[in-house]
Each structure stands twice: as structure tokens, then as C-alpha cells.
Image 1: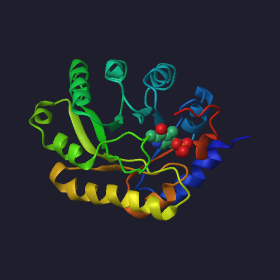
Image 2: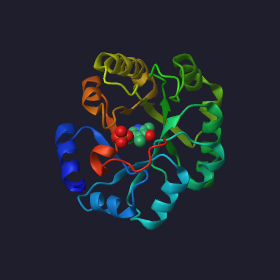
Image 3: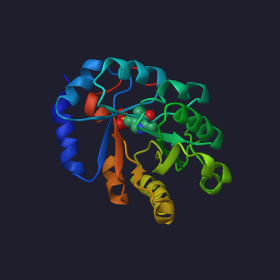
Length: 221
Ligand SMILES: *Cc1c(COP(=O)(O)O)cnc(C)c1O
């Protein structure tokens, strides 16, 4: 049986106080989330808006919900009133929609831009130049209800640590190039398989699922 409380403690001891742990609860039942919640943990990540919204409705309202998956524009409205941080923003049109929905809710929604760092083709994210174009765009300046607070990235799923370090370094370098100018606070990198490597790259946030909640039953993400 998965000992969620013990797993959380083990990981938090490794992370220290400075790094925010997003416990990725996708596909997992509410009972598992509550087990983590009982230890005082409040940051949870989901990658499907419908599933996250169902959990938001059912669970304590002081949970901070992180949308870590690819976001479809037509679903932003379902999470606009409560989402804490959207990690994987990858286009200006999406920011426009987030701004519109956040305005309706009289909120400012925090977002991260996802940089594509993995060499594999399957992963989402922005090329560096496209990311810079978004940050410098006149449109973004008019979006008063979104705040870009940093960057997020996903390394290639591989055992090759040199490659993972190379990919994380790209993200780290771009983050620190932009940090002062854009008042960035958040660098989201590291998952169950590679978070210990990410700790060597000045990350401020990790997204960890299976090392806390156990293996997911279906893994078509
Ligand atoms: C599922 C997921 C995670 C967590 O994955 P684990 O390997 O279970 O820790 C992190 N980030 C994103 C974007 C995910 O989709």
C-alpha cells in the first residue's frame, strides 16, 4: 500500500523549505488528496480541467489548485474562479482567454510560460523565440488580469542524466535572463523521475505525482 504521508515527508525533507511541492493528484481519488491534506499540504496539481474542477467542488476550499497540463481555450472558464497557477501556457491566444475569464471573476490569474526543452517531439511548449515574443508583446501589456510569474519545463523521459541536466540548464538560463526584468518568482521543473536533478538548477517548484501517490492506473498523459 502506498504510504502517502510518509512519501510526502521524504520528499519534503529533500526539498527543504524554499521549494514548493505541487502534489500531482491526477487520476487519484479524493481520499488520497485528503490524506495529503491532513498533513498540512495544500498545493495539488491536475492536468485535466474537468477532473480538477470536480475535485475543487468536492474538497476543502483552501487547496491551491495548479493546472499543469495542456489547456484548451474553451475550458478556461471552468477553472477561472479558483485556479491558483496555470503552468503550461504556450500561446498568446490562450492568455487572451485567461485574461477575459479572470476579469469576469475579478481576479488576476498567475501563469507560467512553458519552454520546450525536451528533445522528443511529443512534449508541448514554446520555442525560446516564441516565448520571448509573447513576453514582449503589446497584447500582453493590455491583459491586466493575467500575471506571468515564471517558467515551466519538462525534460525528456530518459535515464540519460547528462541529457536531463542539459535540458534543465536551458530552462534555468532563460529563467535567470528574464527574472529581473519580468519580476519572475517561479521556476517549475522536476517530476518524480528527475526532481533531484532539477534541484541543481535553482528551481523553486516541483511537480511530483507517482512518488507520492503511487503509480497511476492508466497513464495516457
Ligand atoms: C503527470 C505530470 C507530472 C507528475 O508526474 P510524475 O512522474 O508522476 O511525478 C508533472 N508534470 C506534468 C506536466 C505532468 O503531466
